[in-house]
Image 1: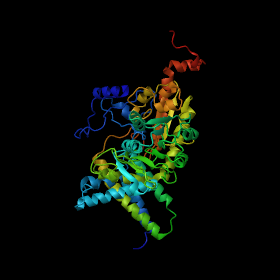
Image 2: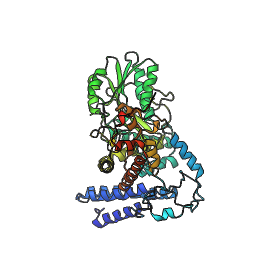
Image 3: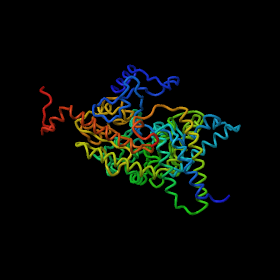
Image 4: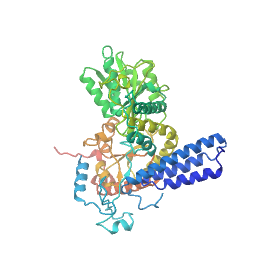
Amino acid sequence: MAASSRAQVLDLYRAMLRESKRFSAYNYRTYAVRRIRDAFRENKNVKDPVEIQTLMNKAKRDLEIIRRQVHIGQLYSTDKLIIENRDMPRT
Amino acid sequence: MLLRAAWRRAAVAVTVATGPKAAAPTRGLRLRVRDRAPQSAVPADTAAAPEAGPVLRPLYMDVQATTPLDPRVLDAMLPYLVNYYGNPHSRTHAYGWESEAAMERARQQVASLIGADPREIIFTSGATESNNIAIKGVARFYRSRKKHLITTQTEHKCVLDSCRSLEAEGFRVTYLPVQKSGIIDLKELEAAIQPDTSLVSVMTVNNEIGVKQPIAEIGRICSSRKVYFHTDAAQAVGKIPLDVNDMKIDLMSISGHKIYGPKGVGAVYIRRRPRVRVEALQSGGGQERGMRSGTVPTPLVVGLGAACEVAQQEMEYDHKRISKLAERLIQNIMKRLPDVVMNGDPEHHYPGCINLSFAYVEGESLLMALKDVALSSGSACTSASLEPSYVLRAIGTDEDLAHSSIRFGIGRFTTEEEVDYTVEKCIQHVKRLREMSPLWEMVQDGIDLKSIQWTQH
């Protein structure tokens, strides 16, 4: 399998951020968005294709986790936090 | 206790807000949260409709009491709650085998976080049970030759209570005092060790003031004097690097729900080389190497293992972030409010647990005023009593400052917005309460409160 291209990495990054913004819990949502941004930024200079592939595979597994947990969060959603109505809707 | 009674009265008096969720069962405390302070910055839309205002949950800043489940942990647990429900001790079918495999995988994850061998990890129902096993188990096993234990005055209630019950069985216990910084004096520890001391128990990070004890040095002292060293690492595991071999730890208690894992599970690390013998507390079928009988709860231990693995990966990132947020909180509060004291040594300190005393303000009234933020003064297990915390008393805090202490907890999921909001509300309410306080008025007039004769008889 060919090593992941820059386009694929960016696609995965965008998909993960898009999915993370759907968390209904404020703390999970803000953590996921922040962590994904920081993790991709931290690894942006990795050159070794094997390492890139390993990171991509882990990210794909994490995307699946996010999808499932977003769904569960929506099934059991509750009231918003006191600071949510004053911020931007998706912090 | 007063706080909870008032809360319950308020809950009965307030009507449940109707809306699109009316059909769903009512979960969580549905209290209307309206800020009564006249100069509040709450936007107009929430204050506009007093009967049907939005019901909003408070911010969670009490991570020392418990932590939310990390989504990655819940994701690891769910298969074992839905489909893979076998008993890990069933040896004859696939349900048992897959459950056992998951349990052993979790054991490896926990062991790897603290540098131990998986055979040295015993799953329990939490750090309280782990502390009981470690302290009572070791003391009772060696009771024929060793009758003395050493602990500190700032330990968690379960450690102090276990020691007290051992005293009733005929053991002698030395409760080491702590210095003003909250850290024990190593020379006092050395002096306290006697020829018949079996165990020294010192917690790694204190749950009330966040102080880090010099574990590596204590381990070195204990190992040189051939005394077992137990540490209650419930607040430290997964947050600061721990290695049981580097730090010469013989027993360690681990709690699931302090590291973003599930409640009701924990582990105790019991060294095998050289072997530490422990008398089992719970009798039964001999599970967990005979040290803790009972079916191991696979979903919970899988959660604990996943939490440990996530903690190992995220430790550096979390620590950096939490340190920055803690710095922000402390600097902003201390810059804008006078007479605020941070309890505990500022250097040997875990940043995520901040205990501040606000002079001339009563702690409980500040907590009630900060109803939009979930905080605590002192530990959850002592919050029912009206006495100020014994930990604060042990570090020599004045009685009045001890009553005005609040513990701020910053965790993996805490945001900068939450910290800023907490700081704003805290400053606002402390100023307001001080305005109402006659003691504050006297201090402003230059009267020295210590010189006042309060009673005439």
